[in-house]
Image (cartoon, rainbow, N blue to C red; front, side, top):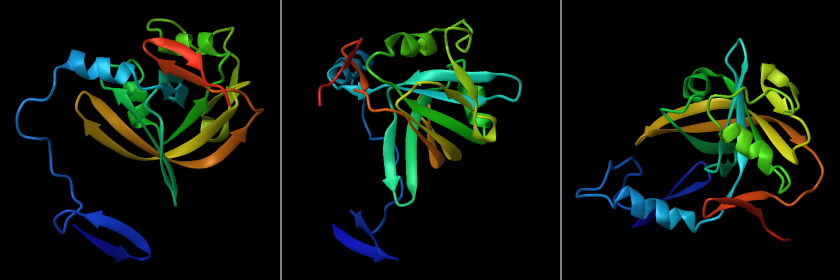
Length: 185
């Protein structure tokens, strides 16, 4: 293993390359075992919203990650069978909303299928680039979508924040072992 330097960035490389190597040979672990392991991993809860041109679209995500600080980038995954998938994949901009511990019902609303997730009591307004912005969330980022990457049965979406909305401080909503909860500070 060696270190390369390019324009001030340090990249660790195993064999002179940092390109994708593909999936591992052999059988992966069983889906049930994979899910059981990740049920033990607490995840922050976010709602992702986009406009499909005619109406607002959104879903609950627990896969949100801060990917890079220079430049700022975030990532999340969305299942390709999700009702929001087509709108997210065609959108140029999206909003990422971080939820507070008292917003469990909002998270549950955006996780339900077959309902109008933006109907009352959901409070929202059009934001920059026409992206739907949820009201009363602790923080939100409006992002320009820069990359979609197929990954198994999901698509990994990478966005570059172009606008921040900072609300009040609140304990974050987390998801652990199939339930919503919070963490203390």
